[in-house]
Length: 333
Image (cartoon, rainbow, N blue to C red; front, side, top):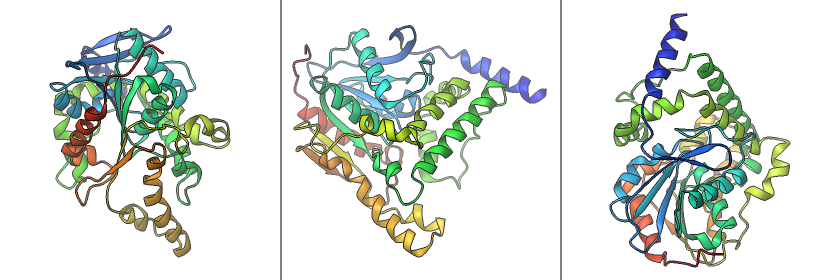
């Protein structure tokens, strides 16, 4: 009982954090949008965090750029301050929701979509569907569908694990048993400590969002799109095919190193390990084929998949390059 009471008290306290932006109706439910800065006749930056996180997960980058251009953070349905949207969650649905949000919020664009990891998948999908609204795309080690569909390790099983983890977390939150993770100690991975410091301004708000059961259930739902047999139906809508973004500027930002530190600890059989070590570095560059104006950018040596927290200046530099290419386009079509 004490655990339930403590969890409910925590949720009530966190829910008291007011939304810093606007709640915009996108068709019977509302999405939260924080829009700051002036585009000065250029492009507007839209930040999309990894996994299925709330917008504040990239707040440090938004804060750094809002003085240079217009910068937008939004919460996907069910996350942050946004209402839960219709289930099942799918990337194609969230691309359409994002476009509805931008239009109803009166944001004219054009937009530079910046997506990290699973957020990169959404950024690329938005660009495919709305090319005249997109000025450029910056993909921060974006998730290629290949990683779940064809991977010799993890693959669809990893997606199923994320689904189960999300459902369990959602149940805990629904019964008031969710508690925030403790602050990282000195032995935590560097990116975890860096993230905690960079996002200190929004830590309480992020904990409030994660305390909602909808947050975890929405995350579980979207990862279902890579589970069997769902992926067979969804893959054509998830994949951005080679050349499909035509001449759109695309900046593919990926670590230089391989994935040894992620694969070798698994102690796989030798033949499977060789296949995994060959597959994953190559899947990282998959997005270079989607446009004939794609450019490869590397963060400093030693960067991990979570380099937006380890080396935020690399991301800011890539976004500035994208803004340089982002001439205003006809957004009336």
